[in-house]
Image (cartoon, rainbow, N blue to C red; front, top):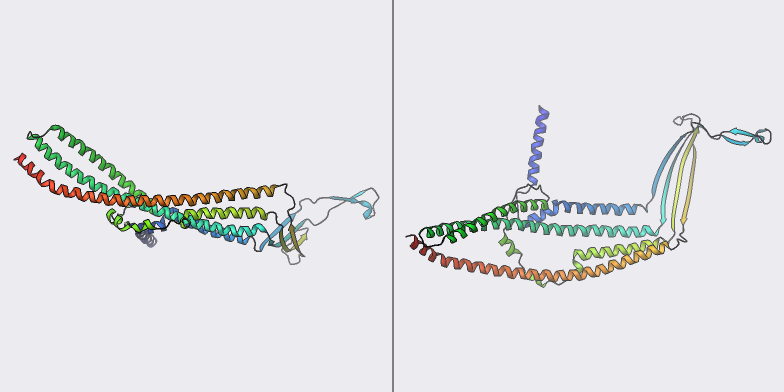
Length: 409
């Protein structure tokens, strides 16, 4: 009973802690900050950086001392027979004696230390590991930017859906009032049935659009949850609204920023690709250099007819060896030259793509500025037109109500 109660309390505490981790209300900035920590793509991008760090150390460690050990046990179930001239043992010439060399069982234990002294590919590998880490970091920055953009779009789609629902609901109220008034005018013989039918059709269409927007609102919330790294069915309240966000983020100063593609993440990624191709050229060239390695080993061997290697009386014979190996590439039938030329061609392609990326980014910046300026002007124009429409409605509505009152009287 006590154990069950402990498990129940632990489960309740876990559920409370889990529910506290789920946000119940978020502003746009809070949503962005939360997504950068919990979005699944952002989390994996951070893991890629950690993996790149481990790979960098893995590459570095290949040039550090490497120690390995081995233990070999052999049991000759049937020892091999060798034939040697019998005259060695006092026999007749031309005859052979059957002999067996060695003991039936043996154990050999050795430890070996290997050290790389010079290897051109190792030096290039260290440089490549650094570049790979930079690529992973830049990929994380790009992922964060994409997550930020996705959250802003999803957050805005939710607010837009909610605002659209309000507009449709207000339109339905107005249309229902107009339909009622037009119906009364028609019943009094001062209107046409066609006007009533047109209003009925319009009202039915607006209600259908309202139902569709309500379904889209649900999908917009689900998309926002996915971008935040939450369960798709999570519910929350958005504390910002479209008008406030628009007023806070309109800045004409952004139009005066200098076009600097070299500071963009796409340019940095293309630049990293160029560096990687340069290192590939160095790697192919380094294959023509000699490699120098050293090793030293030591161990013990034991021999016996029976398995008595665990006894103190078992004799052990030690041995050790030191060596240096120098590998000198001499002739590869043009294989290394072809590999180097291929890497050089890929480098030229990367340099061309870097230039193309730079020019494309400049165009994207100019296009973004143009779109941004148009959006600001269009927003100001529509806001002014909305105010004008509201003023016209305020002026004409009393006259319409007076005319309707005369008709109904």
